[in-house]
Image (tube, rainbow, N blue to C red; front, side, top):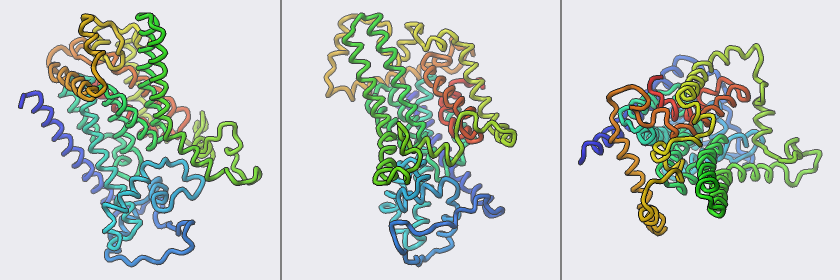
Amino acid sequence: MSTPNFQKSNHVSIIVKTAACSRLFLLALIIFWRSLFEPYDTSAPLNPNCLSLESQPAETVLWPRIGSAIEGSIVWDAVYFVRIAQCGYEYEQSYAFLPLLPICISFLSRTVFAPLGPLIGHRAVLGLSGYVLNNIAFVLAAVYFYKLSAIILKDKEAAFRASILFCFNPASIFYSSIYSESLYALFSLGGVYHIISGSNNIAVLWFALSGSARSNGVLNAGYFCFQTMHEAYQAIFLKKHAYLSMQVLFVGALRCLYIFVPFVAFQAYGYYNICLGHLPDEMSPWCKARVPLVYNYLQSHYWGVGFLRYFQLKQLPNFLLASPILSLALCSIIHYVKLQPEIFFSLGFPTSPEEKNSAAVLFPLGVDKRSKNDQFSEKSIPKTQEKNHNLRRRKQLEGEASAASPIGNESSSARPGYSSAFVLPSVLHLGFMAATAFFVMHVQVSEYNIDTIRTRYVDTNCDL
């Protein structure tokens, strides 16, 4: 086995072990603190019968204390996720929680963990399924985080250090609880990894799944928008090929549409269940809107989310709570802008040929200095060999990461990937999410809402 491959395998092994240990350590802390203090949220014991069932017989379980302990940990958003997995979408406000996590929890509880039902009870099995699922998803997300960082940085040591820090990020509690952050992180990081590796179709699937986990997953379509924008520009202005530009725009729009489909379908599902079959006077206000989106209405009506609606004097402590993560995001963006102002403000169009070649998946029609025979040979690859071609592309990127030396001059020119055009889409993504968290959302939740995007970029700014 070659040294770079051995080093990569060793890094991945250490990251898996570190991520797993970090989850066990965090779960131990949760158990410890819950044994000392009563939880602030007292909604855990609330578990009325499903509306679809007139009566539900009392369960007789063999290990009631274990079942009770698991059920007692189902608080805050976990109450909604477990309830949806158990009874479906019964109430209007439950449609604020997207279906991927409840579907996965329900599936695991009916298959893998079904034998535990008589031992700890059905609701405890649902909770256990959520904990196991999310913690495994986090470990896999950490692995994808390392692989993605290694390709962008072309410095496996820096990627390794960033991945270890990711295992202990400030939002760790949400990744180990019954929240949707772990699945979102897994499919978002995996999607970016696949698009950078050249596997666009797989990336579309992963991004669509991220949009099924959290609403902000649809923003991952921006990576394909960025790619399509540069492809179309090169086709129109450099290659002077109108038909190619139309083809590029059509394919890019189709990929973005696929990413939006799960979220839009869920909105349609909510409209069908809540609005259809009711008289206008009985309908919820959002049903009568020109564009009836249940998610936007619920966030505004039940959670008070809206532009500047959180700017109140009594919320000052929450702004202070969010200030470290928002400050770090702002510093990361400013740092990148200072290093690459021309690339940032021009959205990467004046990027040098060398950088375009190193980020060919984002600038696929950049200046190409190969011979015509080489270009013809690449274009003539049959579709049946596309998978092998993408695999070779991934190995090429990983080989470049292995070849880059992490030792030497600390300037950006000596560190491939540092402040490169490769990072620009993630910087734009980070900026949008940070601004949304500050001006629109409950600012204190910005820590875990932008954490995945933040860590995806901050790992490229190792000086921070």
